[in-house]
Length: 416
Image (tube, rainbow, N blue to C red; front, side):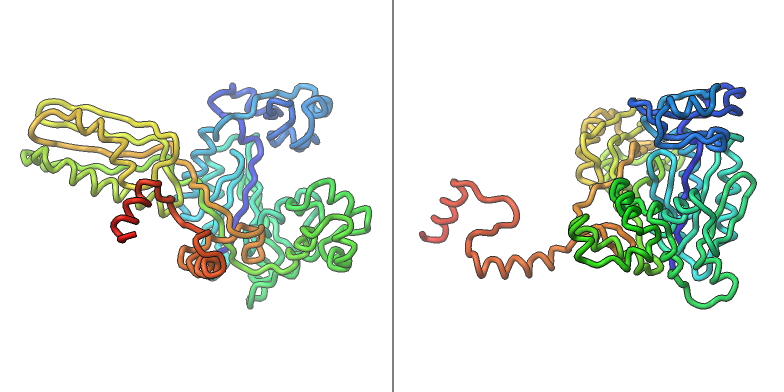
């Protein structure tokens, strides 16, 4: 089974290097271009500042509030947090510069592993930064658990403090630790409607007006009333009651750089002719790692040293590179710049990694955890194509359509 951790940072959208030490111990917020608070420090949140509220409202709550612009990319401290998570588990997804989802495969709740993760994170944060982490049976429940804990104390949940970091165990996980047995997700029925982020805020307010305050209340509303007020999509809201352990997350933020190096033994430099074979082997290994974590690189580069001179070359791609032939094509100019007869060392690296976007082949439900369905493989599409071709011959084509010249050549070769 995979236990899921959902972590939400406080005060993490401000780079520690960009602020004085004195400010690091004061209440501060980060705001976007429309002056909406996107993140707040621990002191600001304790004083009543609301993330998602207007800056003027926050300043009226804390008169000496320090304001920063929301960063365009994760701060250095968040990058360190990501690296800690990647060292603990390969299943990591980052969220909005200050959050993460991690899955830890194990039979029992991984309390010791989670404690080590939080202790490592605590070492790199200052007093105005912390994480609230929820451990639950699947990704949907972990995120909803953290949102629920900000509204009220979750009945049956366990609360821990790892130095300054906060850890919440779901009622199902807590019950499993106490009594053992199978994981029970029935606790989700008591979750407030306000904690369900997949329901739009305006519709959550309309549900409260109907007397629907908890998820179990939603089960008592008829299909006809839901359809009349909110449309057919509302029928899926009740699927949150049917939670199963596990679920999956789409990994979207691997380590920031991958590198492969080759160095000739001292005094045994290889001929320059083997460079292509070396680059092909190294590119294949790099791309295999990229594909494993569903990522591509926007920047690829190489560095070399021959008996005559050394050099380096970088190529910036418009779309993420994740296949060996694309990586080698981008570095072809650098390979041609090599001079000499003997190669001493060569490095290939990829950086500025980005998640590979997949085409969603289904609705938002995935293993009862509200995640995209996996893509349909080509074999399944071929079955559908055969049925459609039988009904509509010559109307459906997969791949590039031949040009007029190619069609004419095929007709000549076919004797037509």
